[in-house]
Image 1 (cartoon, rainbow, N blue to C red):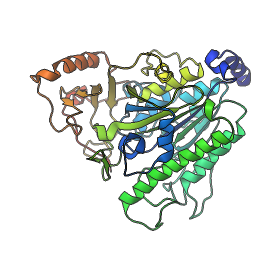
Image 2: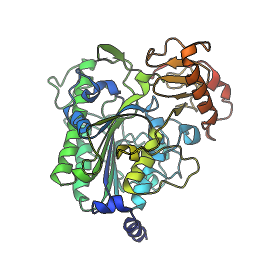
Image 3: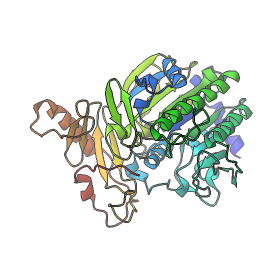
Image 4: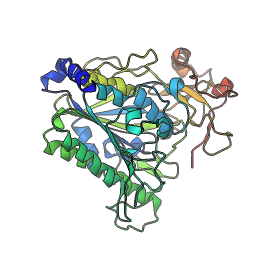
Length: 447
């Protein structure tokens, strides 16, 4: 039955896909814990990322893409196209029964695969990860069945079985090989590849390209890990080019949140300390590069505001598909903007952040008070009433007083936006007061 439905849907795809002979492939790569400041395309000279830089040169670079400050909230928004206020349940979980981006492409006849760090093991049901989230096949770390090793001698689960590994086996290589094989095996049909990378999350250990495999220098190891991330992006690009699929593949590169707080990067003469877990720019400002040489013009930089809920409707538009018919869909497609059209760019974006609502106590390093804010390119307004000029004060050290004349229009605009934004969903446990959204913005980063 699924094959019949898929065939009918493929036949009904609009002209943009038909012009190319078949719907576009999608390869969505999301690095783990690395901010925009770590890439040459954004001006870094500290990290060598030639393949991602080349991707940006031939595609579109976005200067204002913002995630949530922690991995699971970003992944839930990406998978569902909804604000965390509507459907976020708890850390490491995706509420069951929700249509996902993989369902969207799978129901349209695409072959679907996911490889890397899952981090949504709470979504697993009796049918298993792939069936529960819409993927045909998977090779994943952190499924609930795997151990804690992710890099050397990794513990990975592939389609229901734990893979055997040895001391010299490197987890990111195993996952990349799995996805490259999937692409080659499905080169005659459209495919959707979701690659939530294992890199560059802690522990910060040497990579296969590191000069010293026993190095304990975490800052240098992190640099090596960013550069190995770039190497993997190059492997994916090379495979697509070899198969003649590069021009008709929409390739997306981003990250789930900012850099770990113990790491320091230099950018344009500034020193940026990572702030993963906190709602500052250093915790939320992530890279976004999109390339599809046969479908969008390259060599462009856009300053559009991009939220993670926007990916689902954008990729749906690119493939000529309709997003799930849900009244709570918060994402806004930026496909027209990628195609050089006027489109409907955001004037502001909204973030709801409460990563561990079921944590026993807020003094735990793994919990965080409920936080709500709206922002544009320059200003950020918290539900507490604190307004920051991010351009002048990226670390949010000094809120602007209400009497501050120059920021009054921005405060009024963002206050109106805050009044129209979705509030918390049904999943927040009893006893958590909405008063936390009006309390001062916390300063916190996870271990």
